[in-house]
Each structure stands twice: as structure tokens, then as C-alpha cells.
Image (cartoon, rainbow, N blue to C red):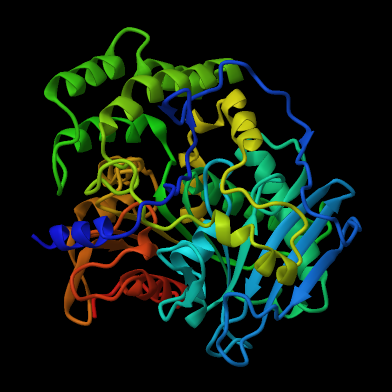
Length: 489
């Protein structure tokens, strides 16, 4: 089978620290810390601060020469200062082709608490980290081949962002991202992008972030139009969510299904699957707790649901296989770790960073764990966005366990939108890239879904058969950002 070739290639990579977007707490993937930590803790600075925040302004380093080395392609990195102690890190890359007319997208990784530098350097950015984690190579399948791309580390405290870590819900995160974008669009270097078609692309906990951010931007646009809010309307045209946690009640049974049967191998024994099934449906089990959370449950109710469900279902069903790419045993060394590269002074001295980079902020993750935001469904936001006319795509990789396609497809099936009846009547068709099958897809109206073969949690980081690494994801991205439904080539 083709996946054995992918497996062999992955096993040939030197053993490095496993990349992760979801923290492991006391041995539980996505667990809840037993001792709550108070919000508002400022991220300590381990580098000398060479520039001071000016609330409402950007601090920008232009054309650092790091990552994007294509001649003539503009890049900028730096901070948008929300306040004197809240600084959001961004890294912008102009489109390699037609930058003056190309759309603008933002990219957000998940966690909650994970840096969007994961997406930049492991997935879709202009360069990719090499297998030794020592340098980067130019990425011919980068998404800035077609669009202007803005990577954002959020909430405050994540990645290179620094300051008081007060955010603990997706709604709070949406507000801060909107404030940052208002600062970014107001800067003379970037004001020309105000009227461009705008897309939100995200993955993992982005199943919460993407719909929540998009719905919030739409509501702010309406408030600006009515005169109740002052600001720049965001020309939102596209929402893309990859391997996302959107609606726990429809997605958690997917762990049970995927662990027992998936395109690669069984993950655990039948006894473990049986125990997890009982934990799902039992009295005051996972299902009942998620329902209670979403029926007006308190933070404690929702946090307890996350703790119970991940301890009794998500974690045990993974077995000894990597949750982000199940063909390999835990831990998988691919994609390569970014830490040594992004903490190197050879890099940080050129890009304008003011704090030591970390892949995941435990403080931010703990804030979200205490509010139980994980178990609060963002399905209503997703339905609002789809029905508003924003072109929306949900995509995933069939080798991902932690947000597996069984759960994602159940979430999609539970949507109640203008296109849901049409979508349900469609049959899956082969999504091809230059005649090579890359996965399965459906379109209905301005909504699309695609499941990529051979891809793990970070879809653009993988290849399948003779299709180059990231090429299938780039084709999807280009079609959607061109305001087209998915079309095989």
C-alpha cells in the first residue's frame, strides 16, 4: 500500500522532539491541570527588549532575509501593540505572484496556546524547516505563491507574542485579533490590503478559532456599518478549517470509530475501545457532560467535561501511535522540531523578536482549560458564517487521530445551513491533482469538504504517492481563494 512508503520515509528521519499542538497534562492529551493557575501572568522576556510597545502601533522589521528568499518578494515581521503590556507577533509575506492584486489571508495554529510559526515553518510558509532542525529550505508549494499571507501568534503569550496572558476563551481571542488587525490595517505599509479579499485559515483548535473569529468579524463589520463601532471593515470572503475541533458532541464518537478502524491499522485493543465506549455513553459520561456544558453549563462543568473525556476517551484510544500521524509510533519525529531554529540568535536578531519562542504556552492553554472553552461548541458560529455567504471549506488528513476525519465528517453532517441538504445528497468524488488521486471531496453551494489521503494533522506538511509535498493542499487553497468550488485537475 502507498502509506507504507510514507511510513518508511517518516521513520528515516532522525529522532527529534515531537511537534505538538495540544499539550499533554499529567499524561493526558488535552488534559486539565489539577491546580488552577491564575490568568494575567506576564510572559517573561529572556531576550533584551530593544523596542518598547506603543499602544495602537506596529513595530516592524522589513525584509529580514529569513525564510522567504525569492527575489523581490516583500516580507515584514514584528509586533502590533494592543496595550503597553500586550504585544501580538506577526510575520507577513507578500504573494510571489501578483502581490498588488492577490488576496490576503491570516493563518492561525491551534492548541489552544500553540504558535502559528508551526504553520509557517512546518506546513505552508515560504520555507520549511529541514529534518535536522538546523536550517530552512524554500517551499515551492507555499501558499504565498497565490496570496499575501499573514501569520499571527495569538493569544498574548503564544510563540513570540508577549505580555499579560489574560485570554481564556475563543471569544476573547477574537476580540484581540480584531484589535490587532485594526492596528495592522492602519499602518501605511499595509493599508493597501484593507479592500482585498480576506481569508481566515486555521487548523486544530482553529475549529474553534476560525468560526468564532469569522463570526465576530462579520458582527463588527455590521456594527461599523451602523455607526456603533469605529474601525476598518474586514472584507471576509473565505474561511478554511483544517483538522479542527468544532463541535465536541458530534466529534468525540469519532475517536472510538477511528481507533477500531481507519485506513492504516487498529490503534488499541477491543477492550480499550469497549471501555471508552462506556465512558462515552454511560451515566454522567462524556456525552452527558458535553451536553450539560453546552446547555448553559458553567466553566467548571465544561472544564470537567474536557478533563473526563480526554482522560477516558481521547488519550487511551491513541495507544502507542502518534496522535498527529497514526502510521508511526509515538513519538513521530516529523514534522521536525522548530525550537533550536527559532531560538537561534542568528534568526531572532534579524526578525525583530522580543521574547524567547516556545511552541506552546502552558499559561494560555491553562487559561482555556479552566474556562472549559474546549467543550463549548463553535458549530453555531460556523453555521452563521456559511449562511452569510462566506465561502467555507473544512478539510482534514486521513492519518490524523487527534481530530480525525470520522469526527470531522460527523460534525459536517450535523450542520444546519442553506447548503446542508444539498451536501447530504452528494456522493464523495475523487479529488485529483494532475490526474493523481489525492483524496475525496464534496461541494454544495459555497461550502466544500475534502479528506486528504496520507496526510496527518498538519495537512500541507505531507505528500501522497507522486504528488509533491504540499501540492494537493496548495491546489485546494488556490481554488477556494479564487472563489471556486473544489475541482479535480
